[in-house]
Length: 176
Image (cartoon, rainbow, N blue to C red; front, side, top):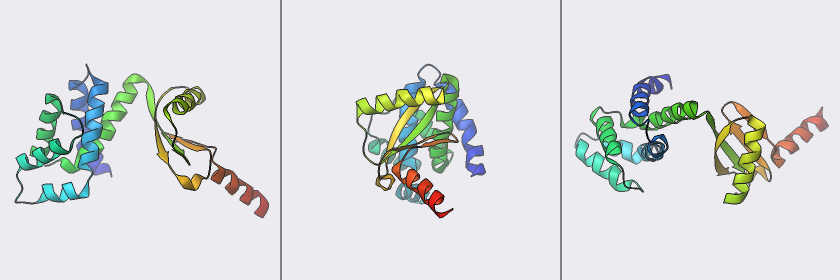
């Protein structure tokens, strides 16, 4: 949605500039706040005319898994005061994109039929970094319908070595 991206961009850029000393730390709490703000029940609560900005702030801080630094609290107060809580997930996405551009890395979503443990994930990530030619921030999503193998999405590039994809290829060949 272009409108959300347009609204989120100045917030993400300002946060990026003010967090230049600790981008990785800021990235953690921005992602967490974005995930919390994406909750539909929270959006409904925050949109109620009977609820104050302080109540919304207190609720989000209490739901956060980690203790938020003062910069995060100030940022959250600003977002809530400007009635931009619904834009917070997009702010997190754009902040991550700015961070990745500066560090020369990319986010990689690895879809797997089974959970991947830490050592195996490190090996897969190292192989994928060679394949894609850049540093990757890998995260795993379990999709049992893949049957086996993995499907990797890095930006607009896709590497699909899943059993499901191979079966689809065989189906196309056999029906042609």
